[in-house]
Length: 596
Ligand code: GTP
Ligand code: SPV
Ligand code: MN
Image 1 (cartoon, rainbow, N blue to C red):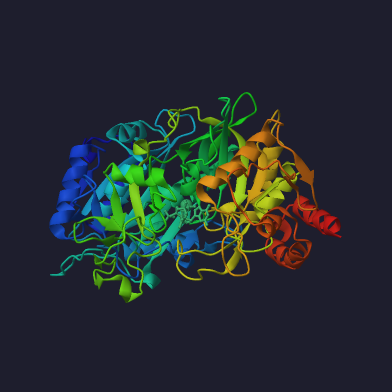
Image 2: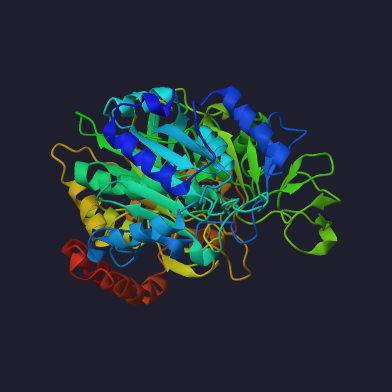
């Protein structure tokens, strides 16, 4: 296919604008084929951007610039026409001013480079829940990652050309090769020149200056969450930062669960966990994002809009997440900011092997005695979901899977119990709206600090968070809705000496079993001030050896701790002003009263 053959005026005009502005040396249309993928990888090996690994098969190393290692939230903007529509939790820029700035920044931005046109679908192309996008980028790294993470094909371009709605995505690393400037392995722009921008009214994304993860793979956070959350609000569906898993009981009964945890808080791990309790089975539908629509039966049906996993590498091992290890070991994987063994294999902190010598992610020699981290804490693997040994057979079903339970959670050393069931939908929305977590390396700065992260969407909601709470409440009022039950979980409770009170990982299946039982009416709960907690004996602890005091902390209400949190919740709610739904203040007052 050639861009000269396109007939859609809107599409052609948009393409031509960016080509004329950025003046790339050439334009290449991506067709999603293995041949083109291999060709681009080989080219990157030749240029020094990729190193081909000895093992796994058909896999590559990439190491980023030291200043371009994670999402940059303070350079991420919602360019709504009115500032108020971006709300208090987003950075805002005036759309006209931002476009004027881009008209300067993108002038000649792709000199000496190739502009790739990536037509992609989020979700199976024939799913009624799927949506299409086209990303223009000057980064071959972005092209091959997008080929794993989304469904790229010329058929998508044909359908868009025939008039199908699409999201316009433009990306440049912001490092033109003008004059006699030579290319470098990871081109990017300094942080003050980086812009990750979203235009919710016109469904556009423009990203400049970063090549890393969610800043550059525009189908992921920019489209599937920030723009899609706006589309979902307007069209009455949901776009959430949630994994989706299939849970099968020993009796063969199936339930689907979706869970929202902030970045680097355990979604990939839970989505493909290996249960430690006999007879229970977990299979994966998705590990990061869920798009959900009501079916005619009133249930919410979810699809995974992605086609791959962009997973946190450090901490991943045969012990913590064997199915992730098996997925990447099948090959076809891109490792970014991991360490390299002398044999051309991969390593990161808590990997199963114990190396004596490595090349670290900064390309320096490394031994354990060095005392630094060999892999960056936000090092990632990009790997095809279809390779996951526990991917559910229906993971690409166009109609999606019916969701029985929503889980919220995060990293909380204190106060929050292992599992807590909401009393009803409105209380569940309050739980989501007051989610908080200790910060991680998935975003630049502040690791370890506690921050409120409503629904794990703080960095990803494309509009006013107060209106987003309202949208959740409206979902609960959908006529004939059979709503999922809502639970709050916390795998990260710690003792005074810092040890984890709960073993986590595969043992989280015990909590899933209780949740399953709550959904079909077989598990017992006791009503408390904060919600329904497992009744003594109703949580399967067979074969575990947790000290009595630890169990008590995990499964009881810390009244004093909760009372101490109340003023923080109040301050958090104040940010939303008049947009905070009255139901949220009522829930807060009720909680206060129950705590006494
Ligand atoms: P994003 O891709 O950034 O959205 O992250 P994610 O939510 O998918 O997080 P992931 O599953 O990659 O987990 C991140 C970190 O949390 C890893 O270092 C894991 O080892 C750790 N982790 C995951 N599950 C558990 C658990 O049950 N207990 C403990 N203690 N740590 C966990
Ligand atoms: C996250 O930060 O939640 C991620 C990684 O899943 S990124 O794609 O960089 O957003
Ligand atoms: Mn994520």
